[in-house]
Image (cartoon, rainbow, N blue to C red; front, side, top):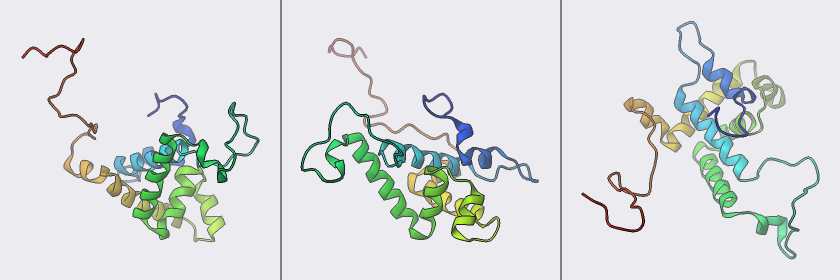
Amino acid sequence: MADRPGFDPDESPLTRLATRRGRDGQAFLAEAEAMAGERLRVDFTRGNLTPSVSQRWDAAPRQRGVRNGTGDLSDTAIDARQRVSAAIDAVGPELSGVLLDVCCFLKGLETVERERQWPARSAKLMLKAGLGMLARHYGFAAEAASGAEPRIRRWRAADARPTIGGGSRPD
């Protein structure tokens, strides 16, 4: 994920939890859990759900008569918002807040505990539980359990190959 433009892995609180080893030599977060958290973050960003702190400098003005500017959203942003909504619904209201705070708003665990008045080190456990449910929702947990590499999902059949110039494919 580090080769993706605009992505800084040091910026994410999940990076430290996914790379830091415990006494047993295992990372606190499984790879599937870290991938699920980052996928939520990507969808959150693509859906333009991050709060803006300044004026919009877009070239195109907003449409008149459209409330909240939803007419300005692209299909990609609308789809991303639907994926975020489905993920939050799958996790449930108990754990979705900590997932949004840590994965999307990039708050540290200490900040989350202080804001929610939770005991020390409790946000870490709540985050792990939420990421486990999120990984199951995205299908990453099943892939990790089978030991297989995460597969690339395609619309076409596995044996389909594109043709060049519209001609038939030699067999």
